Image 1 (tube, helix red, strand yellow):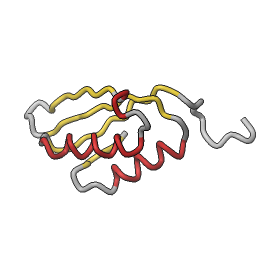
Image 2 (cartoon, one colour; image 1 turned 90 degrees about the horizontal axis):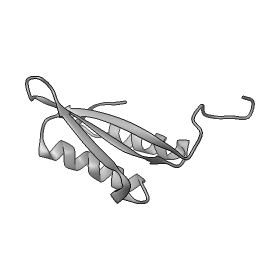
Image 3 (cartoon, helix red, strand yellow; image 1 turned 180 degrees about the horizontal axis):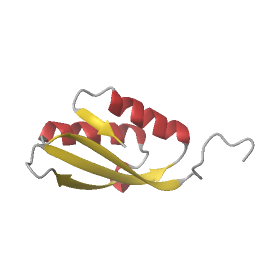
Image 4 (tube, rainbow, N blue to C red; image 1 turned 90 degrees about the vertical axis):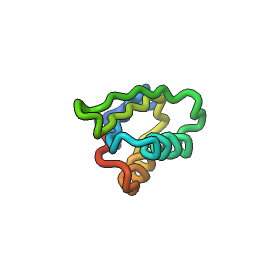
Length: 88
């Protein structure tokens, strides 16, 4: 694997899971960040699941990642958002 900077073959379908408090603002922020970085935001599929006590929300955004730089930029924006607890 000489010369490769990543183990992922791009472009690829990529599921990105983001966890935060179960609020409308959290969902809006995540969707806004994804729209900023994904060329065709309409092609992002979202699914969600709440915690057993309904306090937290896990939002999964599945999209076609184009390259490592795109993923790095998305994770950086998510990490810098005060509403995001975890991004996987």
